[in-house]
Length: 306
Image 1 (spheres, rainbow, N blue to C red):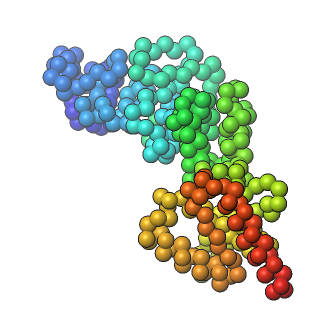
Image 2: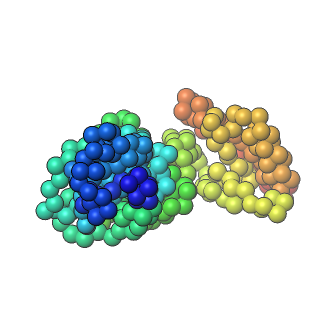
Image 3: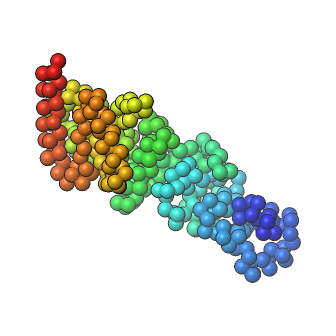
């Protein structure tokens, strides 16, 4: 019996199990703790009860045909499991007339068919649907929820799971008024080239406003047979602005890599200016002034060298 459950990912519907063993055998296994009732009619091996993927499979078995993983559960399957807390309840999208008694699940009902795909052997909602649904669920809940909602969208676009245009389309078609403006704003900034909260802050609070020259974001430059990406590039002065998050650039190896990169760019006539995330958040106006002075001096040098 154990081998049978392991072949099913550690979970099985009771009716499927009874096709192979008798009811008394199942009852004894439950009484001994060899099997756990995780949902009505669904049994699991003890080690599978706390496994994220087994929990999702068990929820689908319980919910029945037509149920799909949605919201945060779908995003975990899409590849954002590192952002979704392991303790998050399983989210299911079910037909509007489906009634489920298990309160440990987050059940969302739909009145029409939704586009789904199969990943890890489980039906899940499309990533743009899952992002829009999760945003509506999280954005206005708590500060932590707001941050998670933003992080999911930023990472999905940054990891090239989806384009900012598809997020914008989903926000326009799928969402009601709750939170829609915030998602549209974020997706628009991602479309403009921002790829992190630090870059978003810089876009909105630092490198903007009167007197700020036109900046290009995420510019690809070839160095020694490879391509590097410039966070912000001012073409007249040929200035590259790099926004350094502490978690990324504080290690000695990362610092050495940055120095080599900066030297290679200098060989192409591109000067690199680096600002730490702490400075951007703590003194945005000071950083803005420093950047404008660097650009002004660089532009003068470029003109005098022509």
